[in-house]
Length: 72
Image 1: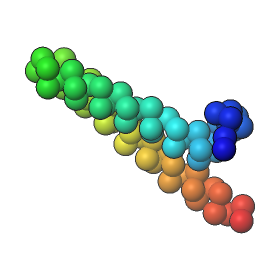
Image 2: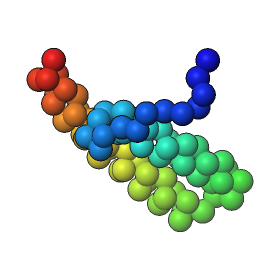
Image 3: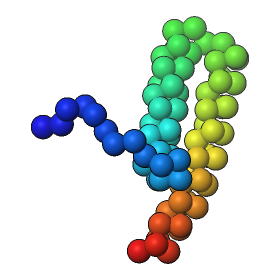
């Protein structure tokens, strides 16, 4: 059983990137719900921006994976 406490991660740790991706994914889900209730272009723009954010994080994750691969 875990206490809910997690060890802090270094900024360059892939765990940090994965957590950030998860937070943005949750935001997208919330924006989806909002858009379904009230379809508006500004919500679509926000969804698009979050998808761009995730795309950038994907690149960051690839770099960090490569970096950690060299450390092994």
